[in-house]
Figure 1 (cartoon, rainbow, N blue to C red):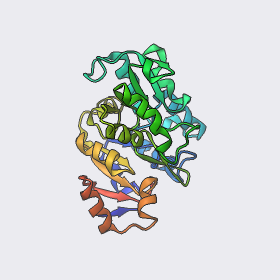
Figure 2 (cartoon, rainbow, N blue to C red; figure 1 turned 90 degrees about the vertical axis):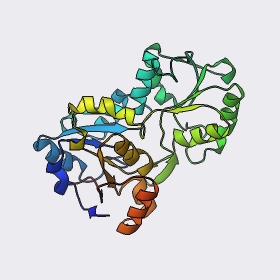
Figure 3 (cartoon, one colour; figure 1 turned 45 degrees about the vertical axis):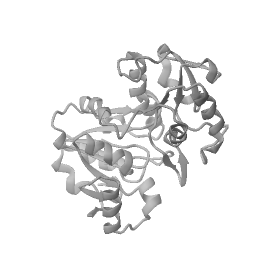
Length: 286
């Protein structure tokens, strides 16, 4: 597998770019070096740039985080998050999984994630016995982000009532700074093991790329490149949606494969995951 030093060699091949956030644009705390400059070069060439993240928060919330990292809004054209899509699905109630759900949610996750149920699309209740479904947005401050085990009692309580789970982040792990932390997907795995129904909102579901294409304002997916650090979600989702994918060697990829990954090993890992990115890139930089 070829490993590119930056995005410049591919810049003119595509009209649109779909970028993961955590692990590609930033590390959960600050932007990666070179990212604003790379985005500025793409925008100077008339390229469309949209962020697609499995963050369990609405797009406006994610934009506020980018603002606090001092990322100029002129450097991108839109944000789509799994939280935004979950909010839409809870509001519309058209999808077969969502149509029969009641409105009372037993929530596992931090309070900051509750933008996904704002405007009354659902309400949080304190007990699984009083709930219609389980809303899983990931770990909370009380039980921590290092180990899914402390969440098992709450998951078992929900499972006792056969609550369907809406998982608003299919990622199993994320890098925040130098720490590898669990995400909602790790809790969903436990719940699936308890024999309960789970719907995961976000990548790799190819359906989440439809609103992204609307934000891009493009019709030809062969002219769109998706960049992500995770084969299971970012690369698999792009491939299922009919887009080329580029594997970023930052975030989880850097944690798994180090600063100087072996190209042949990367190729084998990708194929084992069922994905075939066009190349890898050391970082999102020009």
